[in-house]
Structures are given as structure tokens and as C-alpha cells.
Length: 275
Ligand SMILES: [Zn+2]
Image (cartoon, rainbow, N blue to C red):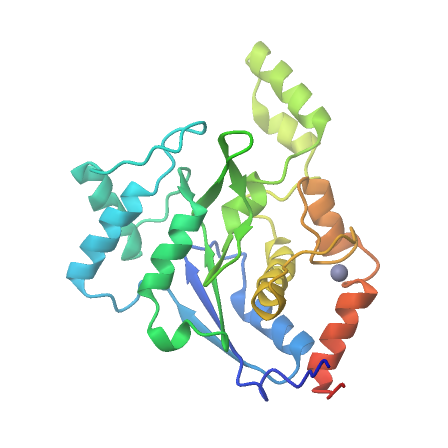
């Protein structure tokens, strides 16, 4: 027997956090979209997950953060004693005083760290925690024995990376072939990027908010059903490995969700009881 009632009827609450995200990501719009699709549900914009942390805790978390940085793409080795300068850098970052990025962090370790940070009452099934960050995320692939960049890691909380949406899904093969040629000839890559403009999500891209809506929905589905993804290439829950696939699923497809997921959303929005 399957019973579905509205999310607010189930006491579900969604909390969106953000850390260093670029201004083109409008979380208010992401929240509005979730509200529109999920029906009655409480949605809170909570700001930085590190906000209000005591200074001693900032030091402790900065130390942990520095030790979950991915050192080498083909090694799982972690740094047990990070350098003073690395810890200081992480402290400034936790306090929102610097926005730089580039080094990937182990995505599952980051989830664990954010879980430890959350108050006990926010860790239960009724709260869907989604953290948007500009940190690059990577997860270890034990089959290929290397780290892979990720757009998102789903868990408690789920983390969506704004730089990951740009860097993790691959660009077209033509792009990489030409990039190699450009690099060999020492040519400026700006021209190459101009040529491929629009075919991938880029820094400063106005489409970021629209793309992020679908990823937020993947996080919601992960929390509700344990399964964030869908096989349908036109469904926003599609797990894209290429930029072209991501842009298709999130922006170009003629429908937002496949029939199965559209029905689940409809039932949630209407608070329908099924048996
Ligand atoms: Zn689907």
C-alpha cells in the first residue's frame, strides 16, 4: 500500500544553505521552484552552513577541511597534518572572507563534516538539507582508482557544486581536440571558448539558476526516495556526464520530468492520498 500526502502534512522541511556561490545563482528562485513543484512545504534559506560557528570550532573545522582536500587525482591518501597556511586559508573561507576555488574536496568527507555541523534535529528524515557551494567536489572511484569531479553528492546533507556544474560534466570531444591543438600552438583559449560558447555551462553563465533547479530536485528525490536519478534523458533527474546532456535535461527538453516523476510530483503537490 502506498500512501502519499503533502510534504507539509508529513512535516517535511527543506533548508537551502549556501557557501561562496556566485551571484548568478538565485537561491530564492530555486526555493520558489521547489515550492511550486512540491506543493505545500516549508522552505528556508539559511545562508552559510558555517554561520554562527564558535571561533574554536572554526579552527577545528578548518583543520578538517584542509585534510579532506584531494591531493592527487590518482591517490586516496589524505593529509593528516595540514600546513598552518592551509588551515588559515580554510578558516578565512569558513568565515566567508575569501571566495577562491580550484582545489577539489572529497565529496563524501565534506558531507560527513557538514552532517557533524548540523543540529541533531535537522538530521532526521523530515528535513531535506541542501548545501550549494562553489567548492569543487570529487569522489573516489575504486574501480578506476582515481578521483572524479562531481556536480553533486547526495546525502545528509546533499551538496551541489556550482563549479562542479561547470567543470564536472565533459565538454564535447571536438572541444578537447581543438583545445589540445590550441595549447600545442600556444594560442589564446578565449577564442576557443568563444567558438563553443553556449554549448557548456561557463563561469558567469546566466543559466546557472535554471540548471541548479533540477539538481535541487535530484537532492529532494534522494531524500524522499533514496534515488536521485532517472534514466530518461529529458527528465531533470537525469544523471548527465556530458555538458550537452546536462543542458538538454535541464533546459532544452520539451518536458521537465518523465511521466513517472511528473506523477509523483503531482501527487505530492495535491497532497493526494493513495492506497
Ligand atoms: Zn524521471
